[in-house]
Image 1 (cartoon, rainbow, N blue to C red):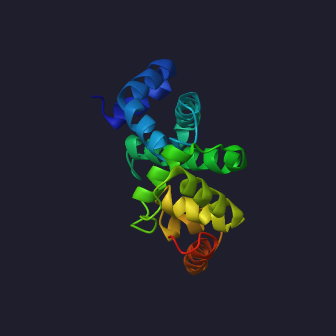
Image 2: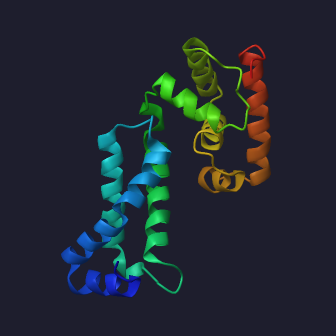
Length: 184
């Protein structure tokens, strides 16, 4: 494997070759990061397009890579996470969530908050209930329990204070319990 310094020099001196080497070394990492954030919400093609966007952005802004602040791998990982979140936010109203897959991912990462939801019908009811919370509450719940983001990360992305995020999350769960008849 090539060192970060060598890869950066290659990106400057032979851009196409440098991009190919970067993609060869980090494609699986970037794909995994984006897949973990967007699977179940987007098609394989959409995920692959997001991966391409990451490499394009890194290639386009290669002058901004500062190896004293971190490695190329960490730079790519941060860009991948941001691109996945941007893709989700940009298209969140157009996402048609397959009930089976989303519900399973949502519930297994929700720290036992929704263990009692068993059938597809109740899963559909939960998705509709989350959507009925409106913005930003539904986005906060999805980011926390689907994307497994911390309150701090959600705060930065939504533009609200951390304690406001925590209060909205708590109130949102209480609203969901009422809407769903206490099955959460």
